[in-house]
Length: 162
Image (cartoon, rainbow, N blue to C red):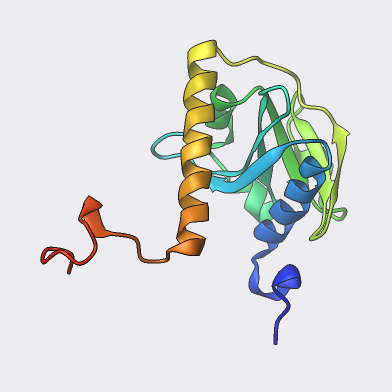
C-alpha cells in the first residue's frame, strides 16, 4: 500500500518540485496552493500567501525543455509581489532570466537561493487575489469531505439533482 505522505511515484516531476517548494515556504509561514489560476488562460505552479499578505508565484521547471517551452511566465508577474523559478540541483540555472527569484528544490524541501525582486501589487489586485486564493482553497478542502457536492446548487434529494 502506498503511504499518502510519500506518494512521489504518483506525481509528475514538476509536481514533486512544487511539493518541495510548498513545504519550504510553509516553514517560512506561507500558505500555498498548487496549480492556481489567477485569471483565464494562466495557471501558476505554486501561489503562496505570506504571513504579511505578500503574494508569491513560483514556476517549477523540471528540465531545459520544460523551461524553453514556457511562453507565458511574464504574464504571471502582474499577479504577484515576487516571482520565482523552482528547479532541481541539476538544472542549468544560467538559462533563467535575471531579475527573477530562484529556489532549488526536490520532492521534500527547497531553499531560496535568490530572492525575487519585489513589485508590490495594487491594493485592488491584492484583495482580488487573496479572495480568489481563499475561495480556491476552501473548494479544494470541501472536495475532500464531499467528493460529489450538490449539483448546480440544487438541494440533495430533490428531483432535479440527477
